[in-house]
Image (cartoon, rainbow, N blue to C red):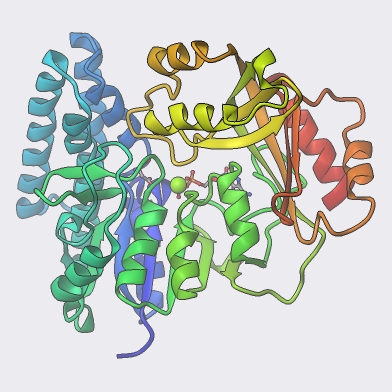
Length: 450
Ligand code: ADP
Ligand code: ASP
Ligand code: MG
């Protein structure tokens, strides 16, 4: 077999029949594309998450179910209402309604994942039908037979060995003579219960399945022609980046560039698989190649922004020359499965931000009353919100003279709450007030990138 390619299409790329048609063009244009990984149609996961919360009143629930019905049936109509697929989608919509009623009685993370998974289940059925109608041999596969996770509903961890064995066994041969269409975002635990990988997780699914099937390339098709120097919605001067290293792109994804789920590049790095990001609406516009090495390695490559940051300041006079304080703090956070993102210390206080990356599907707040109580028994705790994290991404940033001066000059009139610099040569990041964030990323981009 020749080099395999896995192609992932995001929500806008499967939003309706027209978008699906353009995505199908992209699939068949590359004969190496033997596996297609799909998100739910745009807006569907948000509707399902709201339903799964179980808080909607009768009218709101009916409205949500109506919208879901409309999105699926618009696509079915465009496909000519093929009886077999209409029956499948209708029964899936019925199952959503049944689970919605259960969620109103009692909503938990397991039920939520089962419900939320229907978005991808439906889009993948419709896309398979579209490819078949165009005369291509496409076969639908249930990703729950491929991607094995633990039972951490809402943000499951993947079992790589089982996933590899299942992928090779279930679809390794099938891909020789068919295009296999499956779902992103979803997996199943060892008991076959449906799990999800966290919001935006389909990118990560594509990379995981690609790794398990030893593909040569991974394509992420979305609504922008590549990774830009900053989110083009926020900085109009931002430009697409033709090629970027794994290290830089991973920093961008971690620090808020929503175009890639933060974990996407882990499988690609493990197996050294190049990743392409492009627009399914405009494939001719090109895109970004992410690889281990690139020909250019600029000092400043891009800017990223992550909103809704929580800053935790822990203050204790006992900290002076003491040992073990940080160990206790981290012990508490670890027991509550909270991962620390940035940290700075002074003589009697520690400031840290919490890692929101790949946020849970159920959107639970990271800081529970229980964590705050445990920390409060150890020291004085201050929680601040309304903050954004701005990251400047590049190369050798802590090795080149004058970087700090250039950065501060670019944003000189703004207030900075916290800075992290030096842990990675690829990034310098700081916390700012939410209200100033967009202005600051524009200043930084203008001053340092273009
Ligand atoms: P999909 O549904 O295809 O997964 P997403 O909405 O998750 O698409 O990601 C694409 C969006 O990411 C773009 O529309 C853009 O607004 C945003 N984005 C954020 N940062 C960047 C960046 N640096 N380059 C390109 N897009 C970015
Ligand atoms: N449909 C899921 C979400 O909206 C996963 C994805 O699109 O990547 O989060
Ligand atoms: Mg996405």
